[in-house]
Image (cartoon, rainbow, N blue to C red; front, side, top):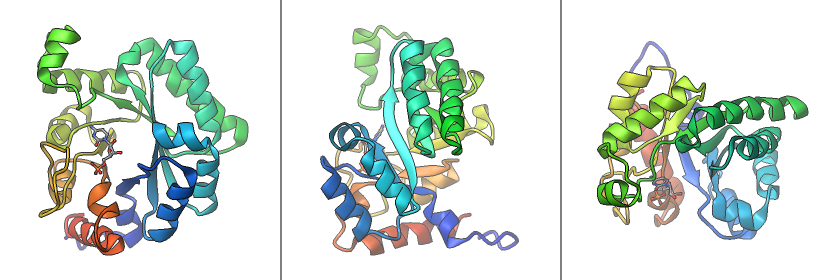
Length: 248
Ligand code: C5P
């Protein structure tokens, strides 16, 4: 524990982002209301497409932080338009694919700032998806014809995002320490694929524990089922906060 700088419980809770992996606004609200300890929620494509921005309003009304995980990927003009619109909502984090390329990433970043200025809110931190971890090394090489090995490719995508002015990247906790070393301390690393000791791995194949992921350099952890499907979700969330508190 770092005793010289006391870290508030809110600052620790902020490190854990819980995904609203549910198909409707009603179910999302039930989850938000049942876990008042959670400060930072992730709204992904399924919920956003089904419920629209009204779920963001609900989260804002309840003073929650929002990770709008839309993984935007299109021509620069279109991605910029979507980022401008997302910027107006006052969300905290917004994802775009690194494979938008340098022009698209710069346009995304600039448009998010513009959108936020239009409504007088803080601009979101735009962060890049380096590579979808659902893609195997084999698919990357044989189907997508990408000649780099997976970790090297993810690293190159993170560097492209950084050079294009983005705030950070989503990465596997396995890659966090290398990305932290190469992209520097100011680059935000958001890691899914985290499992507390003893939790079921589910479809996460190479998970690290929350403490390991934070020690590796992750700023935020995206942890879903180990919290939402626990017999006592609030206690599961609290146990993860305790694990992190011992480190920061
Ligand atoms: O329940 P679990 O902790 O596996 O949820 C992780 C969240 O992070 C889900 O919303 C999932 O879609 C997302 N995610 C992931 N792995 C990635 C990228 C995103 O699990 N590589």
